Image (cartoon, rainbow, N blue to C red; front, top):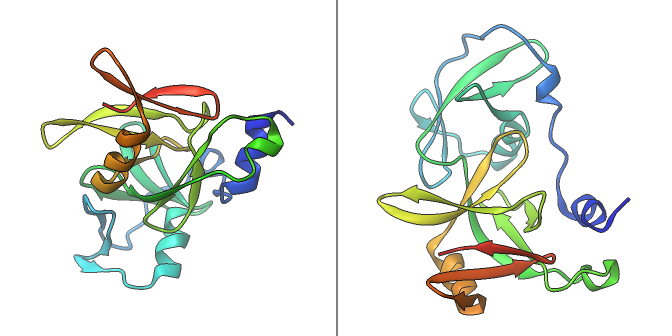
Length: 176
């Protein structure tokens, strides 16, 4: 196991193997996720965090659409922007033991942890007319970096020309 794989196995929660499931569409109603990462079913908020985490574990992005997938059903999901939002971060305490330099660990709105690394890179995308960093996750998913986390990272980033570069797990990422 290489350094990055060890880092990922330490932090990342298992996701269902949705890529292997090819079921027909179900008829359980409409699912949606708003721009703040709040989940809805039939227009009503899903208030049970455990249920949202379960649904998130079977969410994927395939053929230009978000889907909830199980071995027996597939349900489309309307997503306003990105299904998740990075709301907090911390320095990775295990990175030095793995031989990695400074590494940031991002926390999404469901409390899941994601190391910012080559496997989960930061990428700039347009959001409300601005270039904003998104953390690219597995299964075609992403998490928009919240404004507060962005400003905290901008203070730590190096300015190179007109770009702000955040280095995590020995990889440089443009954040603005």
